[in-house]
Image (cartoon, helix red, strand yellow):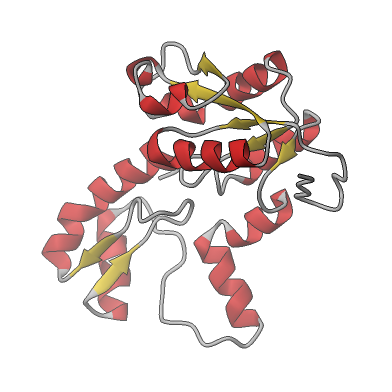
Length: 207
């Protein structure tokens, strides 16, 4: 079967690296296998016995010396593996680097097909703040929201009070619900903001 991802890349995809883990990777690997593609998985040291590595034709360790999540954010090592395995394309799954424009751009610069939106689309829509601004500029009704939150907790509390509770706290980058919290009051904001920031940094490399 002929799989075309982007008109800019009319070549046939014959082999695919899945830059993710667990059930997400398994689903992508299964779909790729059904399309007759050669598949390559990556795994952190902690995931060396994970099921997803057994579902690919080949599997390689990624992010040596990094933590179990940070390993999957190691762009240079992912590109190294992609070239060593001689794949045509990289599929990010969701979460991790799926909405990271620089990863998409790095894949393209390395001569690899990024299975997903273009880097420019990711720059505009991957960041929820800029995506909201784009929608508002196009006349789409949007809910009240802040821009990127400042580092000062007191300043964040003032912004929250100006909008009014309850609030939804959301990571600017990434998806899949990571870094998202329902906030009922100022005390909960103080408690959950640091947790959400740490989760977003761990999941997407950006807090």
